Length: 240
Image (cartoon, rainbow, N blue to C red; front, side, top):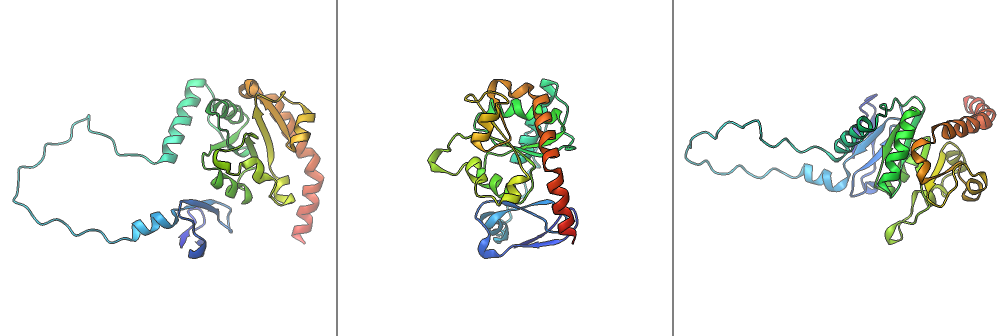
């Protein structure tokens, strides 16, 4: 399976044996843009031959012209989510995300908590995405798409692996690049001992998720200063 990158037109090829049934995303090796692939099921459906046209029938009177109340065409799930988040920002008075601070992934089972922390990150300049497919979120984290993750330690139904559990399998360098924030009723906002115990950067009580801008900004800045020397040394090493 292959597809061109929409940003740099580089052709991305995926071994057919490794293509999952469901839609998935990969990062362009040339420009790091996330490119979505349809998966085996959708690709097979698209490749299936179209059924032959029905036999011609006697001409009939043309159908009436559609009225203004005709149903609108269906929209994709991603577009629907984007419209819902835009509407939520308008209703709550939050500015649209600029992405200046980076890209953030919010993966919380409680939609109220997810909406509250999303508005906080929007105000801080993050481009925020929410995902219900935790397997997809884990793949994107491994590819380095996000520099901030908001999640919880709540186990998933059916024994599925949560994003918090998946963080433990990341390589140290990849894990170090991600700022991890846990949200939940069991936390005391900004408690360093709880954050250290959970091996994350920051914990926030659910009731404070909508108004913890200053705390998040401060802890992110402190973490960036702490790793600045390491990142600069690694950059010099990579440049040879």
